[in-house]
Image (tube, rainbow, N blue to C red; front, side, top):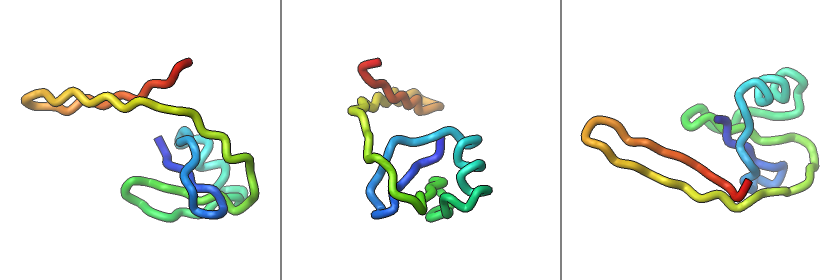
Length: 71
């Protein structure tokens, strides 16, 4: 999962690494942070986001994380 910021620096919905690679290769985005990997778009786009619920399951060895939306 790659975090995405719009041209103004406001968060958008995350994308898959393959989509991020295409945007970076085409010069439509730039890398903002390496950890967590975040890109910023260099073009104006619609600021469409959806509500997402985060779930965390703390186990003795592992921490499980999940994100879910209405769909």
